[in-house]
Image (cartoon, rainbow, N blue to C red; front, side, top):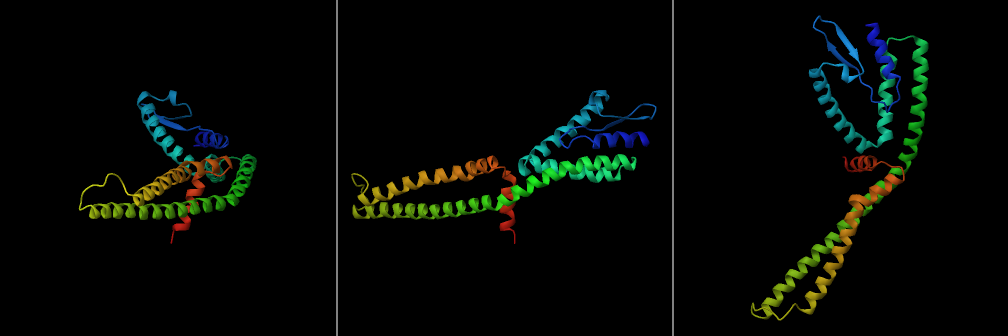
Length: 219
């Protein structure tokens, strides 16, 4: 038990970005073996842990994408702090390692606080952009309806015979439709990619914006 706790404590003391893991297998004589080297495990256990690690890595990548790397690091450091408080180690060693973690957490919290102050600005930009797109789509749909009505009018005038070409009224409507298509394409690109790219460059993780949007639409 003591050996196990010491191994765990050593892993907990590593930086928040470290990927150290503790593996376990049982020998034929019933002896449990702990190691942080996957290569030391029997092949069957290697495959078992490799599958778990692959699944975990996929989940972590999704989480990193949603929260941003530093927010992910902060959460992991918070978890390790809780684990370290419960670890069976000397009190002086616990305090020293907690102090090291607190330095990391203080830095990450300060950065997160600074970015959080910017979050509303970017959420507002997305909200306003969505409103603009909704307005443009309303105009676009109205013009499409006008175009359909104009085509029907042309057919009625000619007794359902086709005119040599579209009427001046329809050409004018179609010119407006084409212009709106260009605007909507640009706005869609900004909404889907551009605004999040700008936010990331400004130090605001895209996941924070999406989180802010979810909170605004929640009842």
